[in-house]
Length: 568
Image 1 (cartoon, helix red, strand yellow):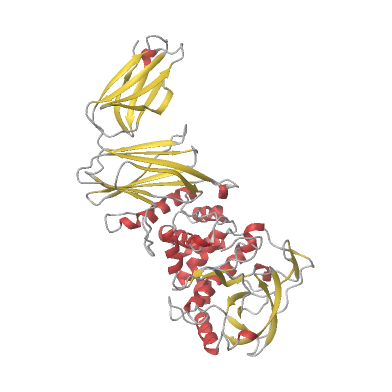
Image 2 (cartoon, rainbow, N blue to C red; image 1 turned 135 degrees about the vertical axis):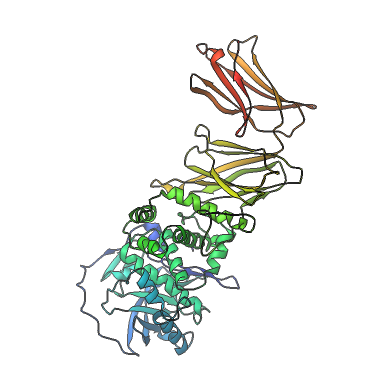
């Protein structure tokens, strides 16, 4: 999807053909960039009386959008099929060129009568039974499926279809970029007749996707794009249509933001759609199934607030950050299903993605530097045993932000058990360390999964960079010395000397005084002189501090190396 100034009333759907061309749904365009609906230039007209039934062969003009020129234009179309819930119009120049009588016959059957999910119910019945009926601005109790040759930007992407919210208003409206825009004053789904999938099930999937947008607009016209698109993907899945391309794209690029679509590019075109779909699928699996997704669609609140409010109203209150944290773990642990027992809430029950960790290491030391992480995106760093003799692993993680960073760590034990725990980030300096002395013996694999969770008004634009390090080896034993400086009063040194040769470890020192922390997990300096290794930490105490009641502790990750009290 390309987000240009032309981003207002199109929620667009993307698909990839086998030869690389991407199909786009047109709906999130102007809506996303400008953030408001067009204003009316004329007084709102009264609702017309119920429309009479139209006969096959009925002709009428429609206002459509030229994506390339960013302007509106008019087409002439003829009614080619009619069903209990739809009228199918085809642009006259496309009839029998790209759209045939068989095309409209198959589309009418899919919309009104039969879908892959249920041979007795069409797209309309499945979605309206579960979500709600669509609006009916034209009073005919039907949805218009308009096949037309969408004038597109070309290049890499093609608009497969769109829903225009401006059609739900009346008269002439003023758009900030396009100027006067005319509403068709009808419930229309625009479908591209020129794509090669126009005569296959793929276009039926587009119809299900766009019908959800129409229904969702009725309840929440300003819904955030990621929620609306996630629900649209879920609607397609509910009707039994293939979401393979969305799934595949997210599996290839799982580190994109769930909530921020403003930075997406053509390379990651479909990954956002896949992420949004799988998040709704996760809510389905763990928070009440289809009725919960339907309640999200009907909720008047938008975005994160709409989801948390819906869950609370259904007796399942939870913070969005907590849900996202569990969801990110469920995504990355999908590759561990054959290896161990991944338990709820860290697994899917229906559609299961196979998402590989972003970084994987089996030789050490391992290092990552300046890894960018967007808000409500997640990374995963997997650590595997390097060799049969490996014992112990020390991890460190550092970022410039000391709040709103969520870290989950998953352990795969040699028994097949999978344990997931939260790892707190030190709020003083944005760092954390983890020591796993049983890595290589009891723990066979480890997954480190960080994400950023900021929910303020500008949360979409938040991001961090982080560094990580991993060293192997057992902790060993250390000889510690606590030494006052003989020349400079109030200066001290703590020295730790390993009693046997080990790899370099991340040792830290913490000082406390009268239940107050003076120094919190400060790193010791690693010094190697020939074969002699020393860890050193120098510090200064204020004159009023009594050294004999200053407690010190040396740790490697969560493991205590040594501790004691300073002495004069």
